[in-house]
Length: 87
Image 1 (cartoon, rainbow, N blue to C red):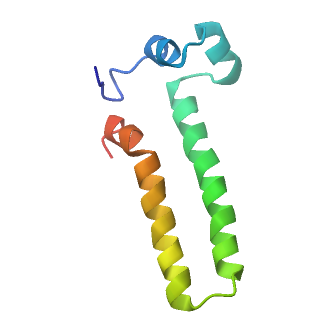
Image 2 (image 1 turned 90 degrees about the vertical axis):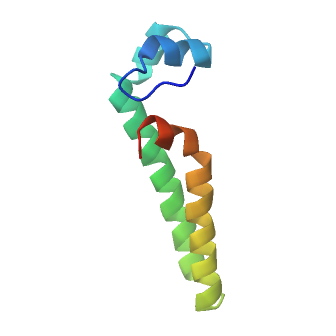
């Protein structure tokens, strides 16, 4: 059953990930902390890819295309998370 962000709880997250609740709290202080870390991690990866695109020996058109593809791939990777967060 899919839940929205407010209904989602740590117990459900841990059950889905097959980890103990204590293990979760060794790494994250809250559900908000987990979501923030997911986005920060993805953002850092995206920045590195954007730098590679920027420095690549390609045309501006190809750079823009690669940037758009990156954004589309990011959205598709996190589509369920965006739905949970109602974004």
